[in-house]
Length: 395
Image: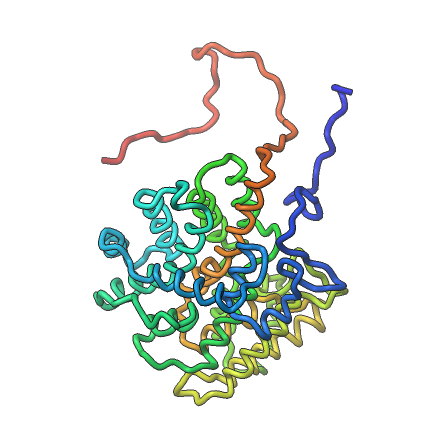
């Protein structure tokens, strides 16, 4: 038996079941569910805060629980002075995902995980504070404004975010709801790369902050987060639907990647990512606003034309990132904050998986198949120069 080689799994572990979970299911029959509840129903009738509570605690809150939860999240909006000082030292050209990671690590030093500051409290602290962290840094590096990050305690996270971003007390309800729905859709999606990273880290029994920090680092990678940023950059190069038609056809001809289409979990037979239809409707609704307020019917028309071409030519459906790009752009969210919003939402899903991993923990430690050869050890004077490395110190 000892001579039998373990089966080599597909690259990227595609289609490989590595754990069991009660958090999320993704299938063609029932679509996506969070804790057994259909995502379409959650996006239609609940708030992001309700969904975060559901993911972390395992069940939807009643009104009293929700009120208490909203108050707890709101209590984390005020940033500690040492954290503000750290944020002011981060340069303008920094990746905002690194800003979140720095803040996450900072919290681990002033509020380390303990019996009094457990995994649930840490999850809620990060969910409640990430908007304040991002936008305090954003306004400081762009205008040297030290903003007050405390808004009305009844404000949802989405409303809080938009108030801080625009520095206005009044923001459109439709914009708030569009952002809220996007956070619900991004909150959880099974064993995505960042979620798996969080679970691998959690399996070592390290602290909650380190688990979330590792997930943020994974989401920062361009093959995971950031697709919606690339989508809006592409869409804004097209002058009209007709121009989009011509350029996309040329890109297809030249075998260039068109961001926002296809997904490893979904295929053309399953009609693509079910989250797409939900966020597309919000992009369409926002496009009907006055252009002075952000509505951009041309952008939406261009997006639809690109969608039509990709379906007819490549049999690829849009994923969640595609219409999220035009939704965020129309409600005035800066490009470099697109992926951090993904992280803000996904902290709830990451936290649920970290807690679940801890509850049935076994150290995740796969093995690899060695492809090299065995070599005799040569004395140093017999070794051949293989690479012309330059180790000259640049002081």
